[in-house]
Amino acid sequence: MAKKIRVGVIGTGWGSLVLTPAFQSVPDYEVVALCARRESSARAAAERLGVPENTTDWRALIAREDIDLIAVCTPTTLHHEQTMAALRAGKHVLCEKPLALDPDQAREMSELAEERGLVCGVNFEGRWLPERLPVWRHVRDGRIGQPYLARVVTNADYWHPTRDLQSEWMYDEAQGGGYLLGMASHDIDFLIALFGPPSAVCADVRTSTPTRTRADGSTLQVTADDTSTLLMRMRDGTTCVISTTAVALQHDSRVLEIFGSEGSITVTGKVQGDATNTSIQWSHADHRGLAPLPLGDREPLGGRPIPNRRAGAAIRALALMLEDWLPAFDGEPSPVPTLRQGWLVSEVVDAARRSSAGAGWVSLP
Image (cartoon, rainbow, N blue to C red; front, side, top):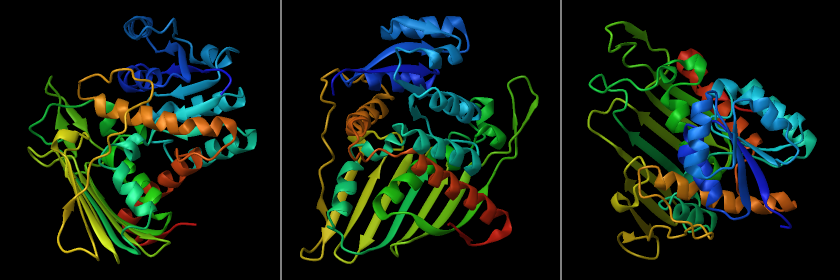
């Protein structure tokens, strides 16, 4: 590429914790400005990360001629408005997942991006975690043959009644809260990356604790889900199961299993992608028993040290995704999820909710 891609980041929560450090790990990008609702937050994040400029006006940030790419890392309620504004301004866009509050918003975003011919992606960086890259490669290379069944089980206790409350918007479905969007959407995206799109969805989506008590004794009404189980019939014939809960007391685990005509793969580990507590085993029809499969050891080419903290795994995965996104800016193919793929995940989530409400199996177009 002839020059660096100049980036403006809207949102300094996850945007400063993970997104900006990931961009800074890939030399082809340059973060030139951060935007937050509060001036103190924008200034503090910019100073800590060495970003030269900060603002509280996201519209002015989008309008700047010296910015090529807008990274939207704000609450889900703002994704549609900010992404549409960036696209109309001729900017490339990277949007945090979930892409939008509903499939209609996601469709509008995707269609405008394609109409304008802009490079756009969604932050489904989970595909690039060290325990998932080898799985992605093995399935893509046909090492398991015809896939029969894929199953993902994720257990955490973030919303168990014994835990303190998280940010209140997370408990409100209308604001994009809940763990079907928060965690299961990553698994929906990954299984679609492995096996292609689903033809139908059936699901049970639940709110186990409909009220929580705040520290001041008042009651918080919970409308978002903490537990869900999805069945997906994939168009290639694979059956996929995704079970997710945030009320599993003292559990923090994930299991991914894939079974096919020529082999099988099992991944066990912690929810946060902690490679020190994750292992992969696989088997092949030509061999007896299970054998270890090494975790992915790919590091960002820029050589910038990844922070040794809980967010480090997400920073590394997102930096690798951003590297693999670069060919798209030259008109070449890229494995990074587009807004159309984010729209598909939104359709699956919507189908799951309709199914749970009584629609049974919901077909996808």
